[in-house]
Length: 262
Length: 153
Image (cartoon, rainbow over all chains, first blue to last red):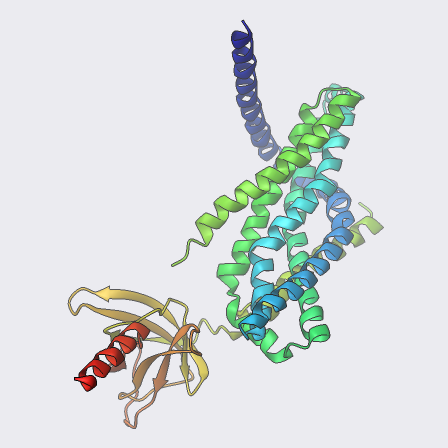
C-alpha cells in the first residue's frame, strides 16, 4: 500500500509541475499581449524601473567592484607563475563580460528585486487588491504585471553593463594601482583580447535572456501565490531558488550556443 | 503629465547604463581599433596554417593592419586558403611575402606581411603568391632528431 501511496504522490507532483509550467507559459503570453497597453502609459514602467533598477544600483556597483578586485588578485597570483601578468586585463575583462557580469548581476537582481516583486504581487492578491482592480474593469495584467516585466527586462542589461564596468575598474585598481602591473599592457591586451560582437554583445544577449527569465518567474510566483501569509513567503522563497537555478541553467545553454569554439 | 524626481533618477540610471555600455565597447572591447568600412581583402595559400584562427591579427613590422576573415581548404590545390581583411590605408606591393608567425614561444599565431620592392600594388581580391607556412614544433623536433641520427652514423 505504501508503494501505491508514494507513486500516487509522485505522479501528482509531476502532473502539478507540468500544469504550472503550462500556466506560466500562458501567463508569459498574456504579459506580451498586454505590453502594448503598458507601453502607452510609460510612466508606470518608469516607476517600476525606479523600484527595481535604480534601487538595485548600490548592491550591483559594490558587488561588481569587489568581484573585479578579487579577479585582479587571484588572476595576478595565477598569471605570475607563467610570467604573463600583462594578460591580467584580458582575464578580468573577459571573465566579467562573458560570464560573471551577466550571471552575478542577474542573481543579485533576482534576490534584490525579484523577491520584492513576488512579495508585492502576492500580497496584493492576498488582500484582494487584484480582484478589486478587475472589478473596476482595470486589467491587472496590463496595469500591474506588464510594467514590472518590462522594467525588469530593461534594467537587467543596464545593471549588467554597470557591473562589468565596475568590475574592470576594480581589477584595474588592484592590478595596476596596488600591485603595479603595467598600465599600458593592461589596457592594450584587454582591448586586443575582447571582441565587441563576440564577447560584449553575447554577454548583453545573455543578460537580456536572464532579465526575461527572472521577472517572469518572480511575477508568476507572485500571481500564483496562495493568498495567505505562508503562501506569500513560500512564493518569495521559490522565486529566489527557481530564478537562480534558471539563470545558471540558461547560462550553460547560452554559453554552449555562443562560445562553442572554432 | 508632470516631471518628477523619480524621472530624474530613472534617467540617470539609463544614462549610466548606456555610458557603461559605451565604455565596454570603446575602452574594454576593440570597437575603437576596428575600421570596418575602409578595408580590402587579399588571399593567400599556405600548405600548413598551424594554429591560425579566424580573427587572428595581421601585422606588418609589428603594426596591426588587419584581421583574418576566413580560412578554408581549397579542394583543388589541397592547401589552406586564408582570406585577409586589410586596412585600406596600407597598400602592399605585388611581391609581398606572407608568413605565419607566433607571438612569443607559445603565444597565438598571426600573419606577418613583409613588403617587397615591386612598383605595382596588390588590388582587392588579389592573391599573395609568396607564403611561408606555420612552423610546427613537432616537425622541427623530428627534423632535429633525424639529423642527429644521420650525424651519429
